[in-house]
Length: 249
Image (cartoon, rainbow, N blue to C red; front, side, top):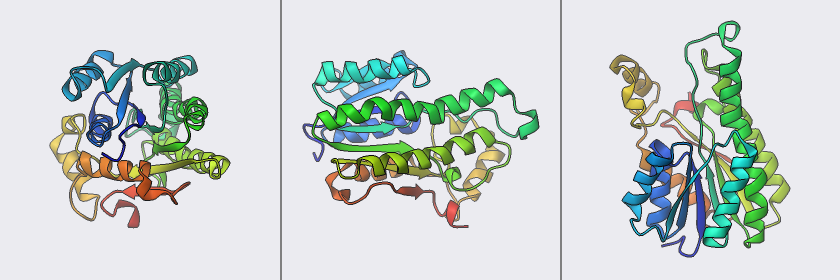
């Protein structure tokens, strides 16, 4: 129960990796705010964790909208009185297999605004709240493709590279103020959405990791929890891959 008494936000917490991260933080004692665009789906997760609603709260949030993100922080403070931990996980992949000249401009903006600008908005409003609560930690979700190129997914790749730079700048700005900020880079993760991928492509994704398989969601959630915990109190500004060797190639 290392997060007993702590309040955490998980964006994109209604499904997939975000859902598992929210579950892990809850299991370790945190009060958790699940932020997601799909409110009904988030409530299914919330009810599964805490039917009483005493330790889990759902806040409909669109990270592309700064007013929505500010409302998330204000609501969290009103509901639980503080904010100590945040996982900025909300993101989209966007259309794949499309070269830059053919990439639709609206799709570019949608990916960048969700995956990069959304993280900026979250940091902008989370940081003052965490500092006023006595300090804490933030994990931003990048990707293994945040440090390597990926043909056909330029917006996603650019955004995930940007998340690492944003993380490092923010970490330096608050390193001596009781706030640690790190980025995690998963490889391909076994999520419900990933299982919708055609089997032959899924096999290729698994083979792209030297370990020869997809990551389990809990394997990423464990690393996120470690970086938020007091077991990593000298870690800030780092990028931590959990990718089965993908970026070591």
